[in-house]
Length: 50
Image 1 (cartoon, rainbow, N blue to C red):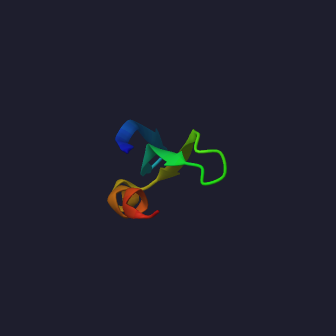
Image 2 (cartoon, rainbow, N blue to C red; image 1 turned 90 degrees about the vertical axis):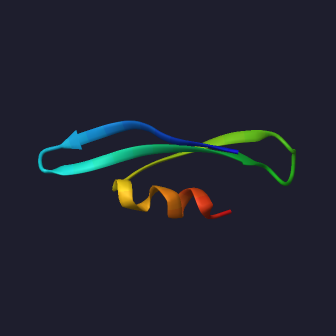
């Protein structure tokens, strides 16, 4: 399960996107959220990784 682009951030001339992914812990089984700021072109690749 993952949430796609949550917010678009603009800093000077670069356009960045903040993505949030929900990851299940193998030890406890609890879910945690992993956030990352990256160019919009890399979001789908980042969400596809396990």
